[in-house]
Structure formats: C-alpha cells, structure tokens
Length: 440
Image (cartoon, rainbow, N blue to C red):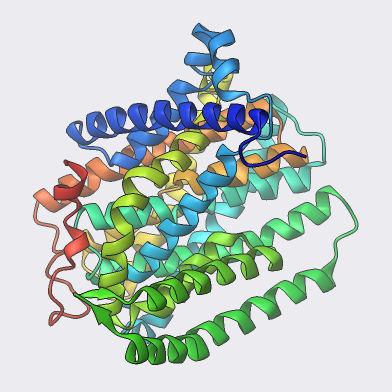
C-alpha cells in the first residue's frame, strides 16, 4: 500500500518541488525584467514558461528538460497551477466594486456582444486562408468557429492583475472592462460546447440548454442567498485583530471551492465559479479587503506564477517561421481590429471619452492565458493542428505585449482613468499598490 511517506511518493514530491523552484526563480526574474521594460509582470511570467518550454530550454537541453518537466509519475503541476488560477480569480472578483454596474448594463451588453460577434466573424473569414496553409482534421466549420472564439476571448486574470498594477480597479473603465470580459468569456465557453459537438457529432442541444439554465441558477443563488449567508457569517464571527475570524475565512474558502466545483461540473470552467464567489463578496468592502490581504501575497507571488509559467511551457514558438510567421502577424492584426475596433466604437457611442474608450478597447483585446487554455482544448480535440496552435499562441503573445505599454503611454499622456471612478467616495484599495508588493 502506497502511503504519504512511500518512496515513490517522495520521488514525485521532490520532482514537483524542483519544478516549482525553477519556475518561481524564472518567473520572478522574467517578471521583474518585463516590468522594467514597461510590461506587465504577468507577461514576463508567461514568457518565462515559453523559455523553459520546448521553444528554448527543451531545444537546447532536451534530456534535462524531460527529466525536469516530464515526470515519471502522475503530473501534479497542472493541478497546482489551476488551484492558483482559482484563487486568483477569487481575488480579482473581490477587487472590483460592482454596485453601480446595473446603471451601465446596456454598455456591458453591447460591448460583450460586439467584441464577441465581430472577432468570430473575422476568424471565420480568416480561416479560409489559414485552412489552405494549416488545414485541420475535424472539418472547416469547427475549425473556423474555433479560430473565431480564440480571437474573441479576453484574459480576465491578466486584465485583473494589470488593472491592480495600474490602480484602476475603482475606475469606470476598469469595472466595465472586467465585467464585459467575464460576460463575453462566459458566452465563449458556451460556444465552445457547440464546437465540441460539431467536432464530435452529434450536437447535444439539450446539454447546451442545461448548461445555460444551470449557470443562471447558480449565479442567481450565489449573488442572492450567497451574499446573505456571507453577511450573516461576518456579523456572527467578525474579526480578530482586524483579520477575518478563522471560521469566517474557512467558510469563505469552502464556498469558493464549491462554486468552482459547480461551474466545472456544469461545463463552463472552474474559474467562473471562483470569479462569481469573489463578486458575491465584493459588496462587503471591509471583508473583501481583509480576505484579500490574507490571500494576496501567497497567491500572487507563489501560486499564480505556477500557472502562467506552466501555460507557457506548453507553447512551442520555434515553429513560427516563413508562412506561419505571416499567419501569426495576420491573426494579430485582424484580431486586434475585430476586437478593439467595435469596443472603441461602442464605448464612444455610450458616452465614454476617446482616451477612456481607447483604454477599454486595449483591455478587451488582451487574450492572455485564457486563449492558451482554449487552444489546449482545441489541440486535444483535434480541431486545430499543432502548427496552428503555435500561430495562435504567438498572436496572443503579441497582443499581450501591446497592451501594457500602450495603456501606460495613454496614462502618461493624460488618460483620465483615475478620475473616472464609479465610486469617488471609496478610498484607494490597499492591494491596488502591488508596486510595493511586486518589488519586494
């Protein structure tokens, strides 16, 4: 019988600890380097994964790469990295104040629909060319739709962390961006179920309707009953030396875990449950701040780099040469126009300033690691070939590299982001000063 102290268990544990140590050193170093270059630290952590993967380390030292990152036993790192993502989405959900979002629901709806439909349509048109260069195996319709949703998806984790780094979580632009991104990505995962059905027929429309119904029920229950239970727990257990009572914090973590498990069971990915749990807690600002203070550093400095770097490990950008490089540039350019263009137009029609609209358009054009998750699913399903996987990963990296410098440049030029707060009475969030924490 294998126990917790069995020799094989210790072997797997040692390999996992070595993986974590190498990842944390690489992610920290690349993250700080990218910050000095004006980029988001998250992009540096993804770049660290790319360099540790087959693109560089696996190419220069294949035997060492396999010994370190291709375990003999069960792979544990993927599960740890997803726990990191769940904790991060919980923090991001808490960081924003959504109290006045109902006033902007029309803006959110228009932004979500436009930045979903236009990229999907553009992706379908672009796929006519891509199919000739890198054809798929599961049929053109699934291929075209998949390219479209990868061009439409937004990186809530990277967007949220970027907004925290730039102290934009209490601004109108920040809240509109994170809410629109969450709404749009939820629709994207619904579309993914249809693509899976097309790739592996028949399409189960009853299952699709069930997913939507269960998602609505879960969201309504968490945002009503869940909030009431949280308020009761806060009043019942309160705080000890300014920190949430252990029973209160434990209960919130249990609720987070159940929400993530519920959305994963529904079929829309566990991170949406984590984000939903954070949104439910966000209205209780004192508790949200206190919980975030307890979880922030361990999550951001230890767990999150594991996910960013692990996703980079699966990308091989060494394939991008010649025609594939031109495909990568084409996807980047047309995907940016298809997402940022409609986002800017809708924002201007909704009354936002030109610069604020530009900032919102940039944020909604940030695919980040969400597209890597999506691409891995498409690759596993056989909807896209490995060469197109590399093209789309490269395009996502180029989009991400554009976002932070352009936002910083717009802010330096007088972008009125910090003055457009939804709640001017709210003091700046303490966690919104990750400049102190990130440089520690």
